[in-house]
Amino acid sequence: MTDRSIRAPRGRAALPHAPVRARSLTTAAAATAAVAMLATGCGKSHSPAPSGDKAAPSTGKLPQATTYTTLKGLGQDAADAAADGTVAHPKAAVPVSATAGGPPVAVLPSTQLGGPTWVPVVETKPGWERVLLPSRPNRSTGWIPTGKVGLETAHSPYQIKVDDSARTLTLTRSGHRVGSWTVAVGAAKTPTPIGRTFLLASLAPAKKTFSPLILPVGAHSETLDTFGGGPGTVAFHGWPSVSVFGKAVTHGCVRVPADALKKLSEVPLGTPVVVTA
Amino acid sequence: MLSTRLAACAVAAGALAVPLALAGTASATTGTGSAYGLAAQGLVAIPQTPAVTATADKSLIHLPANPLIDVKILHVTAKPAYARASVTDLSVAKAALTAHLVTATCKNGNGVSHLADAQIAGHRLAVDAAPNSAISVPVQGLGAVAVTLNKQVNNPDGSLTVTAIEVRLANAQTISISSATCNAADMPTQPPGGTTPPGQPTGKPTPSPTGPTTPPSQAPKPTPVPSNLPVTG
Image (tube, rainbow over all chains, first blue to last red; front, side, top):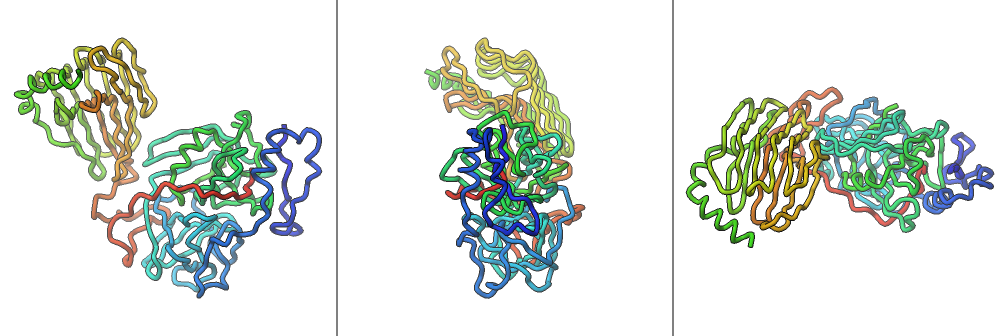
């Protein structure tokens, strides 16, 4: 069966949040249960960034670092090892700079997708922390000041590793393996982006048709500018048919078995996710 | 029924509690492993016996006589990022639970357990049980006995404790058999009030001078938000 019914090829012509094209694929055999579920669960909302992601008034003109935005002028994360598990939560919107001490170029709001913002800390300098950001382009990082605003720091003992070629997801806690599962990864034309990102949010959709839980990460599809009206965010989620596991069939998301989803639901936001080729 | 039996056991064991209190505690410390052979809490109380921390190796032939547990040899060893505990010829509660060999090994933050010829009330126990395999077995005279095999606990300091067998008798008695605790070698734990060691390849975060001086707390389990985001399927 096919499940590639809804996609918007990446390119300059594709406007963000524009109605997706390529409906032509949605014919004949596409009228399967999986497609119906995909369409209702993954592809109907065209709403832009929710109003819950607030910025401080003083930095209102700067772009927000959310899954809906593309940020310019920020550094790229070059490492592919998981961070040490330090995660940070800004209690109020915090400015993001390209360098420690540099001028702010974006704002990291205190919430993401209706839940608290937690980002992994990958480098520290006195008074500054470099964190992974949830915006495009993938691997965006920025420096946030630690002294000026309330910044809650905590430790996540978990690490999530996805092996794209082996199509496995491994969850570890304090270096100990919690579980390893065969999963579905991105198809050849819509691959799951390689590199380091993090668990961004935990969402319980009203229509739990294809998964009771959606766990978006900080990364986006490199080949789809939008997907189903959303910004092309990659996520972990379940899937009603176990036949997909072990296959490269998704639009970038990682579909995981129910047991894996249950375990992942306990993993703190901000926990590093490393996808290797 | 159980409580009266155990109470009787406890009375009989009363004089034994003192000679049994012979070992120190085995707690995880930075960069080390620790292990103990056997411990019991409840009506029959046995401290962690024998117990080692840091780099050490101990053996004990037989527990002092007690009404609940008999073993032949307990052996524990620990060194940095490694700990192992083994107990041979175990017999608990008049052979309701027996095992020829019970081992727990913790290496570099990963734990495994191994049972040889283990059975409870006639049920054979898995040789290499999956982590935290819980079973409940009715035992004549004791009621339901809850057994956890390969119990793995992540400690607040980042270390892992693997206990090969944990037995619970009607919430009145707990027995832990072969337990090993260790850290990952490349992930030293932070002792309370300690500082983060420097020097990680990718820029290990260190506490900010302006930040809190206490070690970071455990990040919270997320609460799902009733919402949807069209993601990439």
